[in-house]
Image (tube, rainbow, N blue to C red; front, side, top):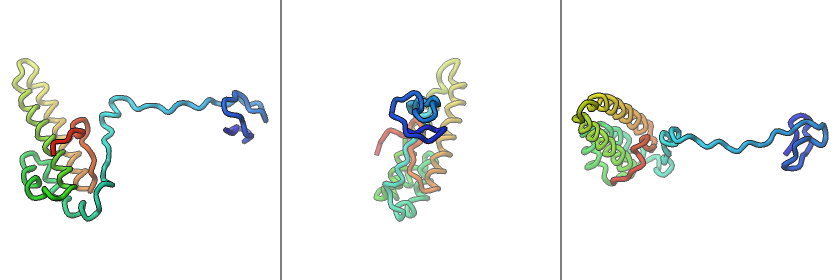
Amino acid sequence: MYCIRCGHSCADGARFCPGCGAPLAPTAAPRQPSAFCRAFAAPDTTADYTPLQIAEGKWLAVLSYLMFLVVIPLLAGKDKPFVRYHVNQGILLLIAAGVVHVVQYLPFVGSFFYTIGIFCVLVLAVVGVVNAASGRARELPIIGQFNIL
């Protein structure tokens, strides 16, 4: 460790610089991200796919996020790994939309949660389409961590 004022070499754990006597700032431990940040920090696995695999399956991957159109890439791109990844994400999104539609039948609070849930599903669909169209294999926040295929 070196003094930021004079540049003198200091022993680890020293509180003052032996050269100029300036107080040395203790090194802070790295901050851990909050639970909220961890839920939305989706891992990016784009490096697992070759540029050719991404280019071949990009538009089928986009279809994966358009609800029931997920059947098209499921059948047409079953042998393409990049497409399979996005089909898995699309199926998870379709399941989430189904859960939101069931929630609307709850008495008193159903319509409130339905409105919020549909908005969240639409936001996740947009995130998925943007990821697929840009050739990234990035999980959808919150629901993308599960594997069906």
